[in-house]
Length: 423
Image (cartoon, rainbow, N blue to C red; front, side, top):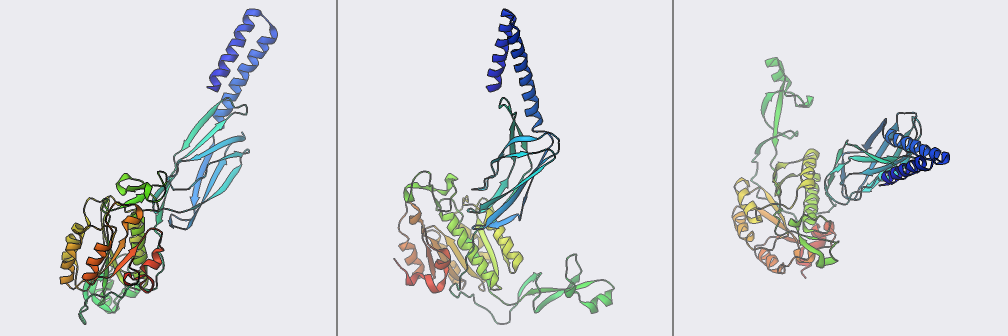
């Protein structure tokens, strides 16, 4: 509206000057017209010959860590950029690089943005919009720099000293016939060399015999696989909407799409990440089953690469599933062995998933349950004591996590076994 008002005022002065034939008004009208043209050209050129880049220290972070990003603006012209208003379109919570900058002729301007990661997920960084104007504030133009990057934020993973010793039924000396890229004491056979195989895997006698590279293929030694089942059905999950109220008054179903660190979804995912880290660091083989917005099934494996794969999956999984927890467990029973240990993580107090557990018990599969107390998140459900009692009757260890609890302490067997902290 400002250019329009300025143009109308200039036109009226010019018209008046023509009517009354006063030279001073003519000079003023032409001066205002020239100023308007000058301001328009200046504002348009202020967005030309600009280069914008953004560089992060890493493409991955973890909840609780500080993510640093360096934004650079380069002026490739002799025309100074006196006023550049930067607006960022990133969807990373709390990430703010909005500011006003200026750049001299052929100058480079850099500044650093530091953001504490509070929520897991995969977030977009950019695009960036720059608004510029003329020195007189008549015209303002915008230009969008469409370059974007992505940041994956892993869930927090707390250190725990021990999780109640759970061990599946081991049958002495029986190897688990599954190839692995890790070097183990057990060799499954020989095969042709593939790009990426280490030199320490080459079987030199066979290589010399066949005149081509032959490598040893290893298999897992007898061990217990840990399968973590994470309940991502949308119905039992609840979230505290802080914009609607305080505490339970602001509780809403997870299906509402609202995200908050105060939710059964985030607590459950954090518990899963903590247990994945605990067992991987203990050289155990860990797998994951979670039916959220899609079916996420990661076969048990060990090592740092497996931990990264699990964290990548847990970073983006959402409580948007349409299958109740009992259906998820029942669908996976056939592939579970009596050497497996199953950890069930859920906020559900629905008895339907409990009816599936005797099938696991009959297969001699050891279990533990991590129950995120839904009532503490404002869910209008019955008290979890009935669920706890049923699990205790089946001799299944239960770890109860309430809103506000330290998840690491709640999962530590020495500090938070349910038998020692029944309400």
